[in-house]
Amino acid sequence: MQMKRETLAIHGGSPVRDSLLSYGRQWISEADIQAVMETLRSPFLTQGPKIAEFESKIAETAGAKYAVAFSNGTAALHGACYAAGIGEGDEVITTSMTFAASANCVRYCGGTVVFADILADEYNIDPEQIRAKITKQTKAIIPVDFTGQPVDLDEIMQIAREHNLVVIEDAAHSLGASYRNKPVGSIADMTMFSFHPVKHITTGEGGIIVTNSEEYYQRLLLFRSHGITRSAALLEKEAEGPWYYEMLDLGYNYRMTDMQAVLGVSQLSRLPEFVARRREIAARYNHHFAGHRLVVAPQQREDRESSWHLYVIQLELDKLNATRSEIYRALQAENIGVNVHYIPVHLHPYYQKLGYQRGDCPVAEKLYERILTLPLFPAMSEQDILDVLQAVDKVLAAYEK
Ligand SMILES: *Cc1c(COP(=O)(O)O)cnc(C)c1O
View (cartoon, rainbow, N blue to C red):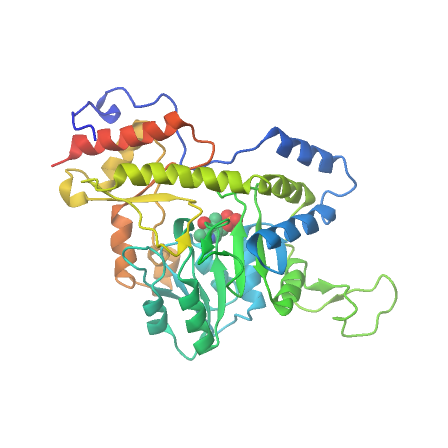
């Protein structure tokens, strides 16, 4: 660690790098572009053959039987809550240390969100807190694999079996990760992946649910397309002719296009390479921050292999003469695009108006005050990694007490 105090860019010094390094970004290849062009010239822009191909390839990657692609990950979570039968009066337990969508999907169905606190070292939902929050109204659990490290799936599935709950794993961060040598997607009742450009692979916007349940699969298909079916086995009345279809329930238009699906297929072929590079960068960061005086590196459990969507550090603020906000701004001035993941969901005005309060999840709230997300994406160069580490040390050294 370089302890010489250099003039920070925010105080007029020269920045560590000339252009802003974002915290996450997609990596589109010529092959990806070619694949999308071919679909643009094909008869199908949507509801064509590429959706099924993408779905079966994701199902295979995740070790699940079925997959249903959606227009985005949030729509996919909405579909999963519908398939699980969440409605008015039902309670669903999730974490507050997540993106709002993990909780919002419950609200779309009229259900009540119950926030369980996180483990202080792992940052994932605490299974003991889940147990403590279960009531007669509890219907489901939505655990989130925060930053790409899977939650304790065996323990959570055990709790769910004891109380007859559905587990919908929000795996927006953990495509390609594994838990006790099983791929994420092969364990929970339903698992959601997102294909937003900052995630492991992208379709622009996009999401998917994987499941081993035929029943959930059928409900997801229905929900994605207006609640309409042509499947003879599902029709309630006799078919009036070959054109016949029925709307069985109120669904949405949450379909993915073929242009997106073909991009997904092409991107998915590089997933192993993307995940390997993310792990390599995280290992570099871990090595640098091991035993660091001013930074707490994220802890990983031995029985899980993270796919490293995010690299989140904790600042030892009691050893620094600066707030997290000042350090954030100083790093941005050095052209390091740090971020904060996440503002605890229950602290947002919408949830506060519903009655959730500061103090509901003390561990998540305390963690939030101390965290910063460092840039992490597969296309980062060696120099990018060195710039991040140099800038963090430069800024922290300048503020060290
Ligand atoms: C990205 C993300 C989502 C939602 O995905 P979209 O595809 O952007 O709708 C849900 N949960 C978490 C934890 C996410 O990071």
